[in-house]
Image (cartoon, rainbow, N blue to C red; front, side, top):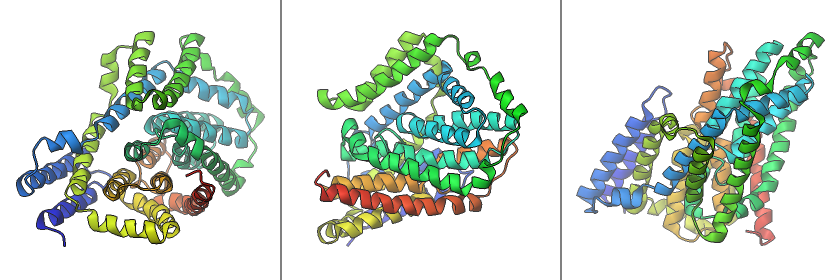
Length: 431
């Protein structure tokens, strides 16, 4: 039987999460207000030490990793690296819509796997719309494909999305181990998504561009967006260093957040970019949102308010692990679609922590649910909201219904594929 304080914490959490669903809501303010109320309940009703708020509930490693990964990516953007690569891709497609379509999608996949998703969708969607306007074609099919692939690309690494970072703060899966275990599924999902969208948009993509429009692509000069080729070589080296440092973190027993800090600071020193400019670019509102969310959900975990739900899941792990995995992927994905994937990922982390030892397949199931499910609606992820806004500002419209109709069958297909893939890894003893 739940105590009054536990019931109140659950009510506060539900009301707070519902309050952030409207697109025009002040998410950071509402989340901080909910966190303050939860903190007050923990201190005055449950007698917890006030230090618990910043000592235990806020996941500082996650906050630090998000801050310095954002700084790192913004510095590469300042060097013009991503725009340079994008323009080079466009020129090499030779004006073929299908090649251009797939090239942008593959670029989004890799950017989402290793870099900040928000930066990836902003940079690539802007470039896509610029190219499509020059070719006088609609960017809508391109953006639908790219937006869904942000979730697919995120499957590849533990830093592919904020939900991944949150979930892995509980799972503790090493960077190299994660990539080794999820790479096949991530690339398989990329292939399936590409074939699906090529078929779905086959009539649009079969339209041939005029020779005049193809020639216009020749006027795109990638060298105009960079100061020199040294910046391209430097940026490529820094990205490789990021990946290698994350893999080495496991071997030298340090957190990847420390590696992110060292690499971001080193990049500032090497490039000469002023730290003041980079700090000004950080979305502090989002970090306040995360801090409040950690307190809100952490209070549920610390007070054992999640214990009844954790007990049900623990029982299913013992009796029906396969059923739990498919339920977790499908319903976790739908919950991410309807409530936003960040609170759902933190909820998964807290529930699994309450249980204790949880099989790795369930952590990966949560990863699939929160990344693929969030790609279905603007409510599920800020990435979809950004894509919709970029299209709207450029004079193009897409309804939520049309987007959901095109992406939902793929969500079901990849979710079932994920269940089968994880089941095979468990049966082979890999997980």
